[in-house]
Length: 330
Image (cartoon, rainbow, N blue to C red):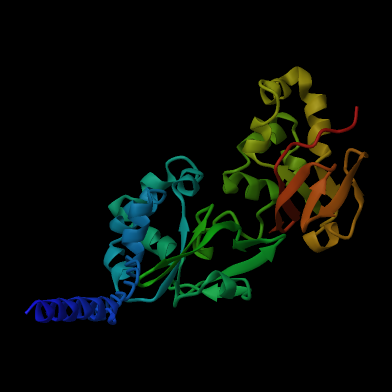
């Protein structure tokens, strides 16, 4: 009996040992996480373009133009499908017209004149800046042509400079200009007998120059047959002189000094821009030379005075606009 008990114990012990030495159970495999699908990027919405009128109104620089369009009942026209190209004068451009001009044009009795002027700023179709620069003229909705000229890197519509281009709208494009352009029928100053002085008076940007010509008794001279080439400083150019200088020069006791300065801006003969750029100097009516240089596509007189507009023609000569007053050597 003892032997049997011992044998049984040995069997149990052997069974336990074999069980301990057996292979470990393999755990069930864990499922791999599935990758999360990436959402497609959402495309940014295209900006919604507004029509020419709404674009001009929201801009804030065209309040006079907007008022004129309303007075001429052209708002609906320029809100229609188009397409149109608008050469849009800024508020400053309208302000540069002779005093009271805009107020007169806005009166009901002058509606037709106002309409003609506004339609002279509109060309059918969408003409972008790259296309404008390839043209020499364009026919407006009024039926009259505007001249287009690229000069020293700038583009001019008649004598108005394009200062900002390619403002796209839903029914066309706006190019901003720095002056109001007038149809030929309204350009009363540009008649066959208009002189350099007449053009300067009508332009509105040369009131100080005109006052100086009157004080120096040179109006009759520059209204003569000529021809003359006048480098004309703008009102801003005179304003940039030291405070009080222009006022002092207009005093009778300073007439000779004023005359000398003005004659230093005049060259005998009609020298167009293409001829000016080929020169290194020119002798003025005063008898003193001015130097001429071309730098980076721009023309400078006496090194620092820039020619900003060229070839404003008159029957007795030509005007080139400059941004500072030339002073003769002492």
